[in-house]
Amino acid sequence: MKSVVLLISFLLAFWCSCTSATTTPNPVLQVVRDIHGDILTPDSRYFVVSAINGAGGGGVFRGIGAGHDANFVCPFQVLQSGRDLDRGWPVIFKPKAAKQVEITESSDVNIEFYIDNPSGFCNNTVWQVEGFPGHAMPMYLDTNGEAGHVKNVASWFQIKKTGSYMYKLMFCPYGEPICTDIGIDYTAGRRLAIGTGNTFNLVFIKDTNIGIKSIV
Image (cartoon, rainbow, N blue to C red; front, side, top):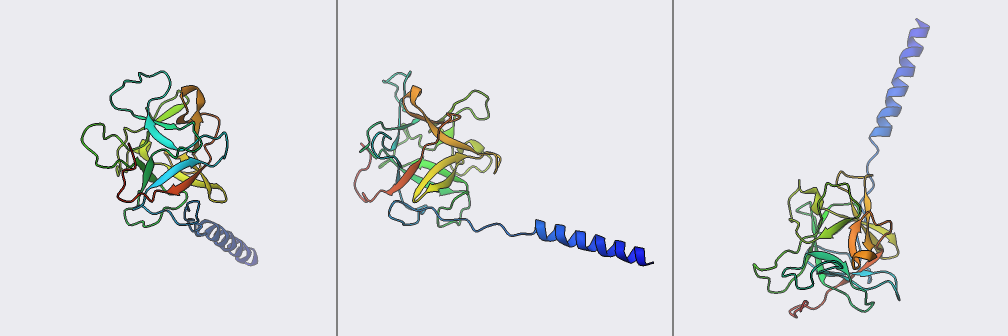
């Protein structure tokens, strides 16, 4: 009888330890901040600029990279400017959670280039990993994605902090920990991609050009 009581006590203790280990609450998601320490929000525009001063290049924009016809009618590649003082084009972050009012780390967002007075012509602005799922690396980012489509995993990205107000973009199609850093393929005209072997460390600068044309 005594041995039975001991066995039951052991099983109860084991069950309690397993229960406590599996019910630990997830850490609170941290907000993402721009270079001035202000929280990123879905209703604002931001320049995505290299965190490296000097030879790190500038911001991102939509254009045509190396090996493509410069006269191509609708640019579709996500590129980084090679000029340090060029902030590129502003972007808008759209969280997967519709009621989310702040941009947070490790949460899915669509990234979309902002264009003043958009028309139906060349209105491709939403980032995606081109050709995903695929096997050839690197896999490049283009602007032929779709915003707001939960099942379109190629168009969702995450932001992770790497330093003081410094971040990186990641592609996590099947959730953590299966994530890949967004880097820059310098052989393709500084095109953003996954599988480059490097990480694009960046900062966010709020676009304050309210009422002024931001893109020429």
